[in-house]
Length: 120
Image (tube, rainbow, N blue to C red; front, side, top):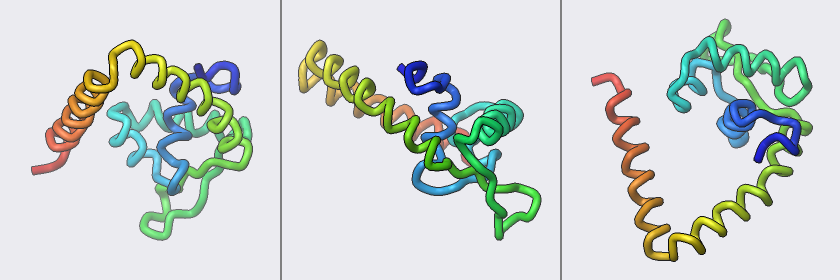
């Protein structure tokens, strides 16, 4: 789905994580549940390709914030129609009630994973 926009799935996920607000690499990694090193490699590649940029982090001088460039936002927008079509087709295949139930289960699973990962 991401390939026609010139992105890999991982690049799309990292860009998606920072669409609404810039985040440090470690924060993106926690959100995505992958290693900081993996996100760092992807972030550096996105910056090199002009899809994202680093900004100073007022809270931590060494942990720069990653933000999408206009080119990065455009790439993500190109994926949206295919993503919407897939969601529509899944809803049609499952039926409205089953689709809602599956979505709620996934949201519950995500929340449970967040609680498990949070420091006690």
